[in-house]
Amino acid sequence: MINQDSIVALATPSGAGAIAIIRISGSEAITIGNSVFKSIKNKDLTKQKTHTLHLGHIIDDSKTLDEVLVSVFKGPNSYTGEDTIEISCHGSTYIQQQIIQLLLRKGCRMADAGEFTLRAFLNGKLDLSQAEAVADLISSDNEASHQIAMQQMRGGFSNEIAKLREELLNFASLIELELDFAEEDVEFADRTQFHELLNRIEFVLKRLIDSFAVGNVIKNGIPVAIVGEPNVGKSTLLNALLNEERAIVSDIAGTTRDTIEDELVIGGIGFRFIDTAGIRETKDVVESIGIKKTFEKIEQAQVVIFLFDSSEFKVSGLKLKVELEKIKNQFPLKPLVVIGNKSDKLSEIEIANLKSDIPEILMLSAKENIGVDELKNQLLSFVNTGALRNNETIVTNTRHYDSLLKALDEIQKVKFGLETNLSSDLIALDIREALYQFGLITGQVSNDELLGNIFANFCIGK
Image (cartoon, rainbow, N blue to C red; front, side, top):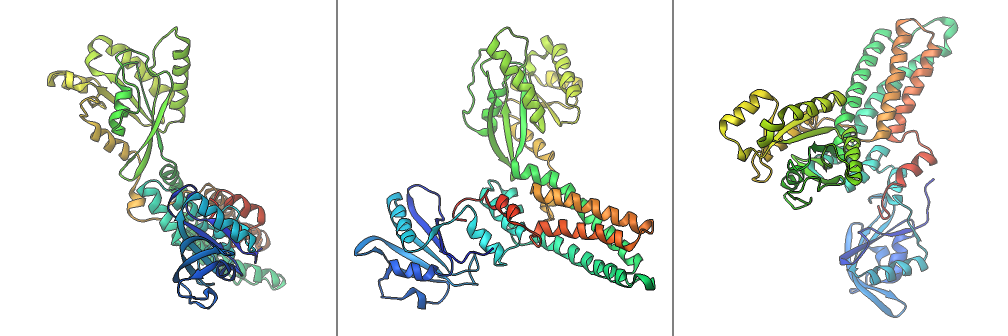
C-alpha cells in the first residue's frame, strides 16, 4: 500500500501569514527539493545530513520566487519514515501557489487528506490509534482534550491494548496447539491462569469503555441549556459566563426568539452554553417556534440550568415550581442547576427563605457578576475529571469504543465457554474475534476502506 511517489502540500493553514511551510515526502523528495533550491553556500541538499537547515532561494528557471529556509529529514528518521523536505517561505498566497505549482511540475503530486500521517502509519512510525490522536491533537481546543490527545499520541492507549492482545495471543496459541493434538486429549493452556487473564482483560475493557463517557464530553464539549421564563436574565447570564455581549439583552420579554450558542472552557473542560427562548404561553408564532426549539435543546443538552427571577418569587413562586417539576419529570436523568437570578435585589432574610423553600437553589446576580464563579464550579463538578487528573487512559474515539464493546462481548463468550467446558475449537473462534477487535484499534488488522475513512477526516498537509 505504500506509495513511492513524492507528495507535496501546504502544512500550515491556507491564507496569507508571516510564514508558510510546504512539505514534500517520498523517495525523490530531497532530489526534487534540490532541483528548485539554490543554497547561499552552494550546498547540494542530497548530500546534507538529516535534520539540518539550509538558507537559500527557490528558483524557477532563472526566476527567483522567494528566499526560504529548507529543512532536510532523511528516512527512516522523519515523521513519515520517508525522505522529507520542508520549505519555510514567506506567507504570501501567491508565493505558496508558485512554489507548489513548481514542485508539481518537477514530479510531485498533491497529497491526499492525511496522507503524510497515513505514510507514517504504513511505515511503522505510528500505530493507528496514535495516528488518529494526531487529528485529535490538531483539533483540541482546551487543556483536557489536548492532554488526552498527547497521552494517546505517546502510545498510552495502544500500549495498554497491545499488552492485553499479546497475553491473549499467547493463550490462543496454546488453545490452537491443543486442536492439533485433539485425539490425545491433552491441555497445554492452564485453565485457571487463562480464567484469571480473562477476568483481568474484562476489568480493563470495562474501565476503558466506561471512560468513553468522560472522553466524549471532553472531546466534544458539554452542552448546557439555559432555560426559564422570558426576561429572567438568561441572555445576561450567558454574557456574564462568556464575559462578552454575545446575546441581546432587553427589558422587553421574548427578545430571544432563537437559541444562541457559544463555548467556554472551565477548568480545562469545554462547555457549550445554549441560551434558549423563554418558556411561556404565547400567541406570537415566531416566539412559539423558539419555545418549541427550547425543549428540543433541553433534549440535546447534558446539563440544564433553570433560571428564574428571584425578586419575583413571591408573586410567581407557585407557577415556577410547577415549571421546575415539569422539567424534572420530563428529563429526570439530566443534571439540573436551579438558579435564582437578580439576588442583588433581595435581603438576606428573603434569600434565606428562598433557600429553605428550594434547598438546591444557587443564588446569583448575572448583571452584577455575583455567584457566576460558583456556577462554573458546580458545572465542573458534573464532569468526572478524576481519571484525567490521575493520567489514566481515556477513550475518546467512537471507533475504538465500538471495537472495545465487541472485544468485551467476545471475552465474555470465552469465559462462558471455559465455565461450561465448551470444546477448544469453539473457544478458539471467540478468542480470534477478540484478537481481531484489538487489532482493529491499533492497526494490526486494517484494510483500505478503514484507512480511507479514518484519514479522510484529516487536513491536507498532515
